[in-house]
Length: 482
Image (tube, rainbow, N blue to C red; front, top):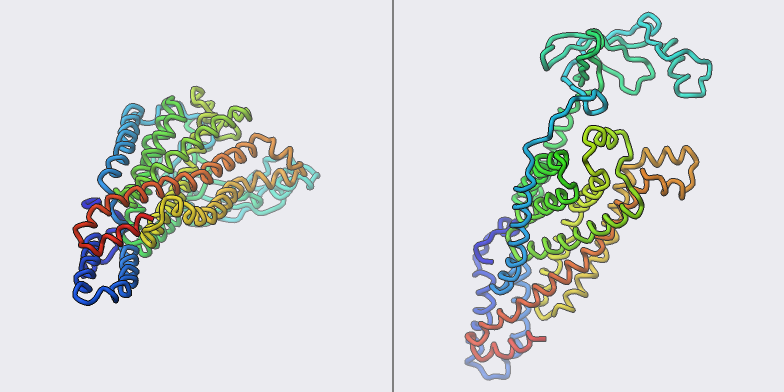
């Protein structure tokens, strides 16, 4: 695809040799002229190493462009799909998250930035910190907390508000010795603001400020990606920013405004897929095949997810956060929101699988251009099987790691595996994991078959230039038909 530029093209150092495609023709024609003078006997001897070097010449450069016919076929499929996606985004585009009265619960609280300006040790009794009724039952967490609050040393922190209308105002925060979050002098914190509370109780520390370490970690990540990936890494970071932009500016506000979560997720995930893949891997036939494979797999995940979420009666309302969302926006379909999360969560791993399989087929074809679609599929699917094993294991462990505290609670309660799996909290993760894994497994043969068909179907056009190279090319052209 002549003028189209991919990330691979940007990373390839220009070579003083002629371009790859013309080399195929001039290489054989030059060989024919060189051997034209001597007797016919020695001609076959140098032909094999010459053809061998020609085969390797393709594998060192960018992917060979496909025929105009195949480009038209791919465009006929992808252009209407991309148009539908971006028209859908325009129709569903929200004007921002709808307003509501803050409940003061969980994340729905007004917050400000603050700083601990003074810290001193005090006796818990002197500051009346033992608000939990004393109990002699120290075998329970509440009993141990009450006993520690009465007998231990508390911390009296003076906190200064750093943002908002009350900037510069200070308040006192008492930290009990058994509290999970301990404060330090000079520490940046996040405070909650309750305007309806008495003045002395309007502010309270709810978290610490982690913006600096998170920003430093993000900078290290970006630097590592650029140093290793170079221009490809730069485009990957841009694609990552665009993906978060689609998520925060389109998907989340559109769902909050009452649009169908499944439709929004499909449109948003498709937009992320198109922008990220083409931005990082270029407007090439190889990328287009990966897009088609990803699209087919996403449709399968959406279908399976819809069937099993309904069949298992999963409501999607499983914890305090989802309960708060349902309370604030009762019109949101929580089961649809669950399905939307399954689709978006599977997209990132799907991209990796489809791009890898497409690249494998392309490289196998360039290493041995005599392979037909069946031979390419068999060779590439062996690579895909290894990829399936690692990716499925990665996905399962990722979900298990996210639900580890929950699994620990079930373990403490000595619950059976059947009871644990039947709980909606765990059943949601099981359905999410298995549906996503089925889509990942299916993406390997689907993408491999598509790539093998596209690459193999491109060979007839490359033979049209064979007669112009001379009589010796004829035998070579016939051998390529196998």
